[in-house]
Length: 115
Length: 118
Image (cartoon, rainbow over all chains, first blue to last red):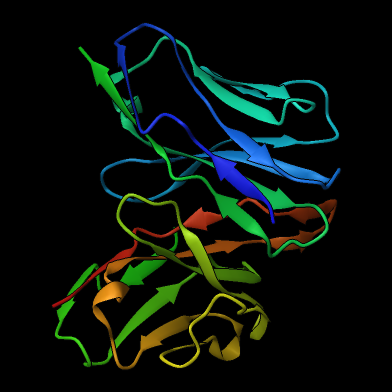
C-alpha cells in the first residue's frame, strides 16, 4: 500500500525567509500524482501545488515550488519569501494514477511564520 | 464561484447518539468525497461518490456510518451510534471529474464539521 511520510511535525521560518517542508512516499506504481495542501487554522484545505509523476520538471506556483526526486521518492515543498499568511498545516498527498479513488495524505507539518 | 459548503460547523454529542453532516459541493462537480481527519493526522477517505453512485467506500465503517448523495448534488454523512473514537473533523471535498481536455482531479475542500463525542 502507498504511504506518505512527513517527518517534520513542526517547522518555523522567519518572515521573508525560505523554508523547505519534506515529504517522502512509498509506492511501486509508475503513474501517480503528488500534491501539497495547505490547511490554515480555519480548516479549509487549499491546494498549493500539484505534480504529475511523469513530468520531470518541478512544478512551481508563485512563491511555492517543489523538488520532485522520483528515484528517491521525495517530494519537498519550498516556500520562498515566507509571509505571515503562510502559517498553516501543510499536507503532502499521493494519488494513484491507476485508482483515482486512492488518495493518501501524510500526517502534516505545522508551519509557523515569525514576524 | 461558491465553495464547498458544510454544516454544521461544530457538533457535540454523547456516545451512542446519532449525528448527521451535510455537504453541498461546488456546482457542477461530479465527484464528492467525505474524509475523516482525527487530530494530529492527515485526512482519511471514507467514501467517494461519482454523481449519485458510490465509487469507493472501502474505508467506511459501515456498521455505524452511512452516506448518500441524492440527485448527484448534496450529500449527507450519518453516524449511528457514535463512539468516542469518532471525534474528528469531517471534511467534504468535490472535484470536477472528467471535463473536456481530460481529468480534473483537483479537490476543493469545505470548512469541515468538528465532531466531539463525549
